[in-house]
Length: 321
Image (cartoon, rainbow, N blue to C red; front, side, top):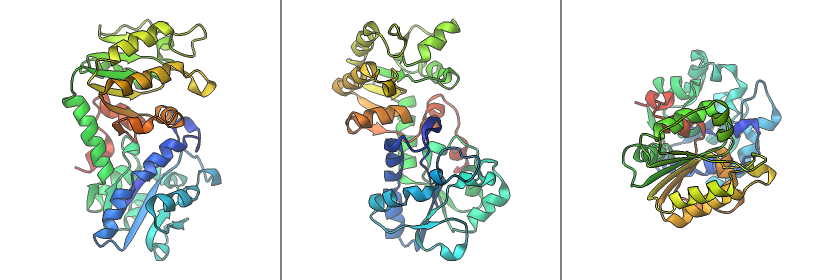
């Protein structure tokens, strides 16, 4: 059962269409392989956003047309778990409409297990969640990682264990609580960690200090983008990089403050480095500016990528061992 999360970040529903499209596209190699190797049925089950109850706007039925175009196959949408309707290629309803999913309820996991013979995890973006479909279901069925999930683990492991030097990590966006472990862990590995977005405001307020290889940007007068001085400092560092990983925009591009992110993106591309990018807002920004294809690898995980690169063990990956 290939599982997929097409979750919009920051509860923005389906506004991050680039991220959703990327995650759906990542399904194709695994789905094709399964049918080419004798699978009679393939069931795609996943998530949209974080609904507290049934919400038509967050139904995975809204993905049916896009999924059919991406997979070049007819897709049957199933609102519930009635086994008789599960034929050929099936898209299940948003699993988060059932409380048992997020509560990691064992009976709910058994309901899912009754639908299939084999479990395939193709949802890297949800691998840090202790959901029934992620951590309990693998214990009930023969299981494996999908092609893209395996590639995610390979790419991010390479970043942590054997990056080509100089290695530059760029961290932006907001939410210091989730980004701080990433900055601190990458500072032990990378030659430079460049910090922008809204994080410098929080860092200054909390009077935080970091290792010497961590460069915290100064901001524009309205604090909505990194300053001209920091743009130059960051692009000078990036110019000599051989490996770059980027998670989090440098400014509020949604409000038109995109100069910092744009110049950072172009400097990364021009560096010729091996580049890995992830995070819903970063992917959205690059897609809007037709730059996404210029990066070596696009991670499908936002929070999962942060936790993996912070050195944490992802519960759903452990469940596949």
